[in-house]
Image 1 (tube, helix red, strand yellow):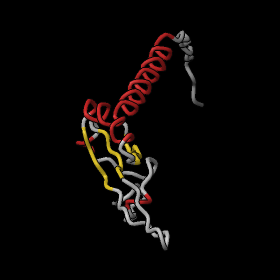
Image 2 (cartoon, rainbow, N blue to C red):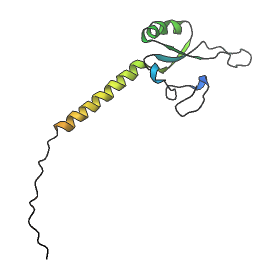
Image 3 (cartoon, helix red, strand yellow):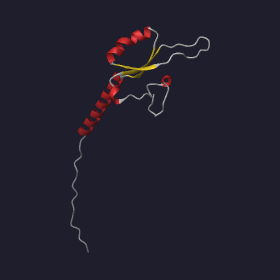
Image 4 (cartoon, rainbow, N blue to C red):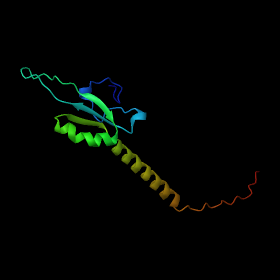
Length: 119
């Protein structure tokens, strides 16, 4: 998977910080789902995590089920947290704009220009 820094990273190394969400998919949860399996003699990892995408309702319903079944779920992108952050940023911007609009405007004093004579 291509990460934010432009590198092709194995799925095992994906984190929420380096995962790139396509613009048209910001309404869905993105997560890795893995049923961890290891070789008993060597300890080598046998399982491969998979990046999954699903809607908010399906994710909320299935998350407890996946965990009960032994899956490891790593959330890469949470659309609810993203929307909340967007709303807070918009509210802060509006508050800043409102504060700037309400700031008292100092009247400009007109400079009196006298006739200057050139000699």
